[in-house]
Length: 281
Image (cartoon, rainbow, N blue to C red; front, side, top):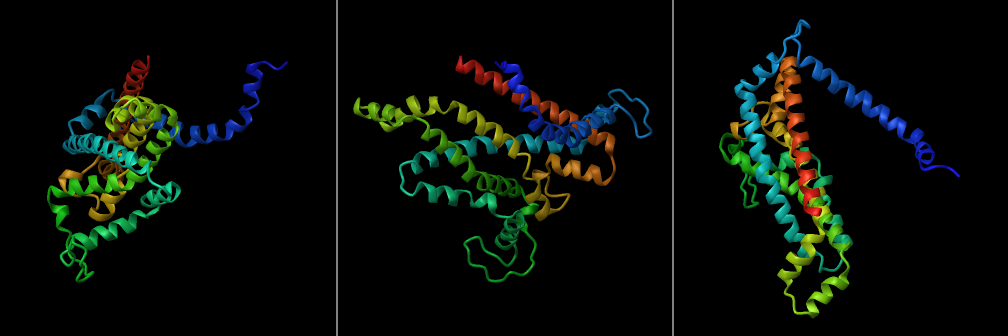
């Protein structure tokens, strides 16, 4: 009789192509970045010199502040709004059609979203939907603090539908007999949500938090296409910094910054996982 270890080895040939691809295109380049973060442009060992230069860089500190603020604002808004919407939609008919509509923002090209921004916020466009001209005027929100909130709105719009579907999928896994029994016992809807639905959605909440956290680092395309490499200070993110350093071939600073960002993300994800495991126990 085949042992469990031998059974697992049977799947190894199917995993090897993906493992090789990840190693060649992900792990090896990152290992090279770690190496470059400790050497100068001439290949000499510099210790923590590149890290010190990166941390003391004003643009790096600005990008870190903006990215941290953006994530801290977007995650609670996205999670809270999507949960409220999913609770309302679960009682509606035509759920399949609704799910298809919710996925539309993910299918919409980024270039199309940028064009809408240019129409709405240009000199010749009006936010109330009446566009008198589609001429190329300057986009005023790019030169003010409102740029940050427009980017937040874009992130929520882009990820709201997918997050709602994740919530609805988690809610579908809760037996209706439990909620119906609670209603028969006189429980109110808010009590059902807080005492039954939310505790059973902890695994879903963890998945949504991790995905939303990672997606918060992917809003660079919208900001870059509409504002270029040097946007308003409020939306100058880490991706802008990496893009500009890559253009200037500042590979050592870029390598040190990537290692720092990866370390922070890894620590945050690990602490979040431990906190979740502790609550489940």
